[in-house]
Amino acid sequence: MAIGGFFKEVVLPEQKSYGDSVLFPAVLSPTINTSFTVFEEAIKAEMPWLDSLLKERGAILFRDFPVTSPSDFNDVVEAFGYPEAPYIGGRASRTQVIGRVYTANETPPDKRIPFHHEMAYVPDYPSKICFYCEEAPGSGGQTPIVLSHIVYDKMKERHPEFVARLEEHGVTYIILTGDEDQPSSSTGRGWKSAYNTDDKKVAEERAAKLGTRLEWMGNAAKVIAGPMPAIRFDKESQRKTWFNNLTGPVHGSRKIHDKGAFAELGNGEAVDDDIMEDCMRILDEECAIIPWKKGDVMLVNNLTVLHAREPLLKPPRRVLAAICK
Image 1: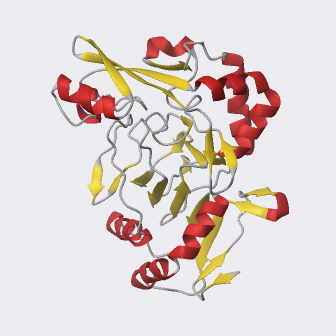
Image 2 (image 1 turned 45 degrees about the vertical axis):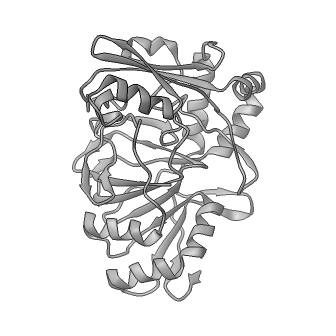
């Protein structure tokens, strides 16, 4: 299917198919050999349609377009026209590459990053995430994505009482963090870089604006975020979504409290480990895992789609990211 003479929708075997043959994610390729400038202008011209497609499908993978550098990717992000989202309070270690482009996550590539909505633990979370594959993985290293309303529906079907408590009480995230970054951890950003200050009082003030409080333990801080809503109603799709990080970098289980990150219900009740294990099975069953190809750009609706990262089995891999309001 060609759109506006430039974009065509293609089918990949790794896409997920839902009712009425709706494919997730949408995958677009050019109809003709083209230049980067033409691609950039086509994005701007077709942005109303692309934005509508993103809301409908949850994610768009742009494949076989001439995006050859981080600078090109930055120009693509600008062409989308979404404002940049601040990363104040974000937990992952990231490094600026150029403009709005950052490393996606500096956790060692052989480690899996579980499914999560970006910054679901703060009130001002981004609405979109843009990924760019600068170097395709030799093996592994994919970025699985899954529709959040599917996860909510499955969880409500299997664990209705737990979901009801989650909707009533929300979730509280607790992270123990030092003053320096620990890139080996997916929640390893120290409080100084998380709140862009080395002043504890200023950090407390900036945390409070995010609905977060800090408890000090010497130079370390216990970051307590919440209670935050764990289920979100998406007005665009008129669906409830599994909008939380209970299976993400901040795992729901108290069993890993000694690793410095866990979550509990907003009333202080522990999260059942068996239920979280089942949730992770649902995520794995329902996700789409498309291997990265050099030059790929993926635009993800963070309000309706969770993402993860598979362990890198064979280097190299370099995937960059930008977050948008």
